Length: 327
Ligand SMILES: O=P(O)(O)OC[C@H]1O[C@](O)(COP(=O)(O)O)[C@@H](O)[C@@H]1O
Ligand SMILES: [Mg+2]
Ligand SMILES: [Mg+2]
View 1 (cartoon, rainbow, N blue to C red):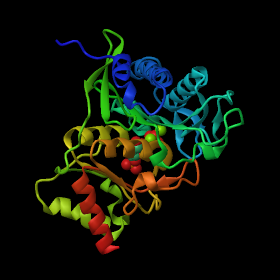
View 2: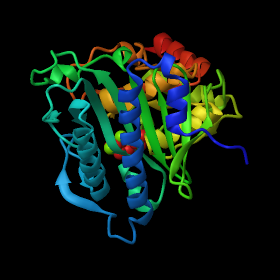
View 3: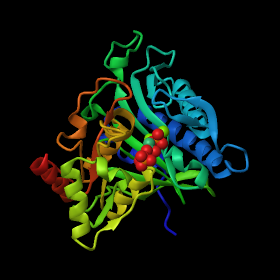
């Protein structure tokens, strides 16, 4: 077995391409990787340690928080606070921005601490999704919500962790997409895929068709198109990070459109759609809200939702074409 590259070695070797000082990004990414190992440990033992089930509280989205939602949120917030690099965090699990008590810090994080919450108790892949920005407000002053409300094009890092059959740490700093797989034996994340490219075309579509009757005309046409082609496969895990990861590796399109229940879409722009859009684009894919490039959307609120069409470029183009024609 060839010697695999560690995260530290990879960052050092790519120092020239990093959007910020190596020492800072190395520290930040290792802090996220270390916390991902802790979440991995909790996830794999959750049935044993009574970490399945609800926490008895709801988040701003009105969703019942799972125990692991709350635990992952606490672990990552603590990590960012202790990193002394992050001044403010926006989290799915907290209504307001979370100040890190370090106004001299320069980085901003938006995160979905635990993605795929409905799959926690049934042992199906779940994840963590995050974006890293540079603050907009002046160093030394109290950060503001505007520091988190930044367009996807402003991201320094877009990343996720997938807690699946293996635990994978996937990110881009604007210089390709790279996957580090966790080796429980050595305790390290090791480079297993570099400069990932998503195929332009594929035959896999991923969408919760349970809401089909409430879909708009163009979306219905695209789903029908996939079915009429005859050899397309429908794949839907119900964890965004897992559906996205599969499509990144095998090609495909993930769609979360407007539905009667979620007229503006369900997924959150800042800490679900933007980080994955950055990764998709860096791998040669596309990410739109049905009309506008996701990373061009000007955020207005911390938990704003958007419709989402992401994945293989030609498949996203086809969906956009049918939406434009029929809506
Ligand atoms: O159950 P639905 O409506 O298909 O929604 C599933 C989607 O909701 C999510 O679970 C929302 O994310 P959270 O679990 O972080 O709230 C996505 O992971 C997934 O793609
Ligand atoms: Mg989520
Ligand atoms: Mg979540």
